[in-house]
Image 1 (cartoon, one colour):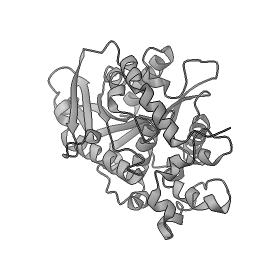
Image 2 (cartoon, one colour):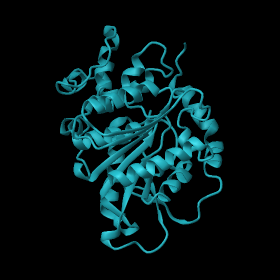
Image 3 (cartoon, one colour):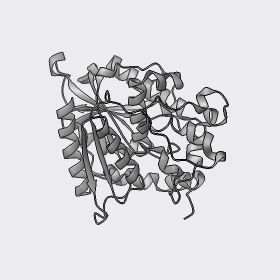
Image 4 (cartoon, helix red, strand yellow):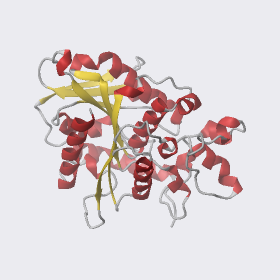
Length: 330
């Protein structure tokens, strides 16, 4: 099987983006409030904008503040935009939460250090401002689909694990205690799958995210997580350095018992299906509560990131379960 290169993926995403945005956002929800394109970094870049979606009405008193769901869109780290997720986010507001829909800088121009810096800056904005929209900055749930799920999961890990934050020179914007849950839709949570024979995506997806670490010779390029972290599979020497660097991209490598509860949705049709199974297994090994919604192959509507398309009954079930998950953890 020939792997999909980065450039082919980018062309594909560019060709379908307009159609997806129109289809996913048809019949807009008008019973909530929308604040679009807030500049969370203060530099005017489209990649540093976020939307806030909230129930209509005057923000409640502090005792009535709602949990906050912070969402990062997917797109293979190279493409995508928050605009395509507007209807998805609006559907979550109907479940009783304030939703923040985030853009971020993208590869290959930027690597994972820049992406995490942006995601962390968005959380800093949320911590300082979300009460104005009726949200509680002390009750945060992070989430995302595909690459966006990886961003949410890795930022959660960096907030919990000082050594991972130090690797990215990141000062977490919120206290670990404020992260009440994590939502994962078909997410890239285990980078070991990239090194398996027959995997669909090229290893250049990994290389573009770790240009400095993959080419370095010092400890940052070779040091794996502390004892107890799961090493990536053995490979030939030429790829060993990349595999070591990939450990700093792979949320599964940084799990421990301090992690908040997780809601995972995937299907046998998703090419990150095994990565999600591995992630759930590791969470359970650490006694982290996991709620999972997994569809079999015969559920035809459950291709990778189907959750974005509200038309599907399978997506509506995801939303019901997500609402219950947020109510339960936050």
